[in-house]
Image 1 (tube, one colour):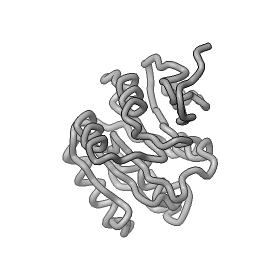
Image 2 (cartoon, one colour):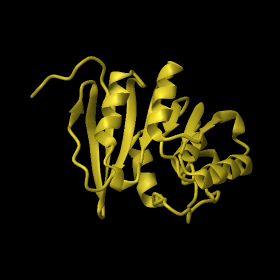
Image 3 (cartoon, helix red, strand yellow):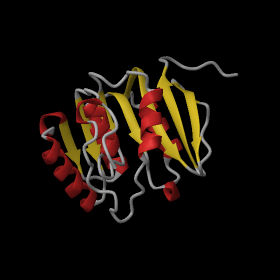
Length: 189
């Protein structure tokens, strides 16, 4: 895995073979960041199921202001810390080692909101609907912010109140959806 763009471009990201993770391939990551069309610079980012930190590090390379990394796996946290050290980006990183729901509740309690949220949970969990509803109902995503969802066999809606799916791509057996917070409540069609 490498950083594919920005000021860290070409640098190797540690953590390709962490047990229990499924790293996003570089070509998929490149496509995702291309779909975000320059909306990463100066953003506040949440990488909820961070794994090696691949998405968050890419965001920092593209000048994200701050990235919150979370993973329940202690090995992932160890690897993310190594990557943060290696890239000398500790001033742009906050790290949590929590269950995803505890992390979301903590972020809500701190009244935090984000411009960009990455959701790439283990496919077997089937928690994306609940997470998208929680994000929307608790104002964790700023208006005009984006949620990038990586999924396999889970069915998701086109809209979740103020979150509207704006892009969808298929890569083999996995799919990527991008939702945008359009503010207010979407019209029912």
